[in-house]
Image 1 (tube, rainbow, N blue to C red):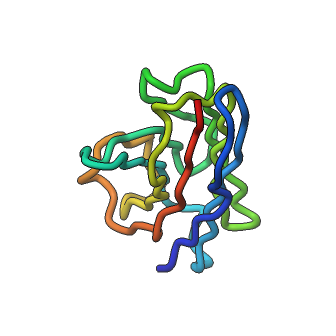
Image 2 (cartoon, one colour):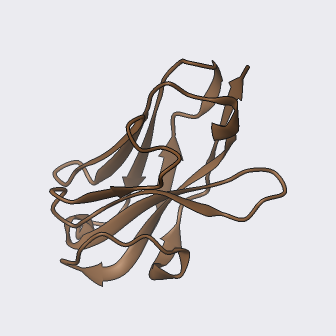
Length: 125
């Protein structure tokens, strides 16, 4: 399984970015997906999660109302729309895939077995 994240970059506070994660496998639609982030010197933390079908989502309190996770199972992609960005959103963002099939939303790091390479988001204040 290969997960390729893209869409990171430098943006001013208050701006928006859309991250995308493309999966190499044809069975992508069966699996629970998530986005995590890791700021410099900090632990990797949960950002958003989505169930296999895309009808259920969950968000960290710090991003609720500003970020939206979605997936397109026909295109094997999961996206993270980030609005009203803040300096504290600066981090490397990782998409992740669980081994759980047809399951509900997962939010803990150890629930995910496969990780993308990360994409850097820098928000200037």
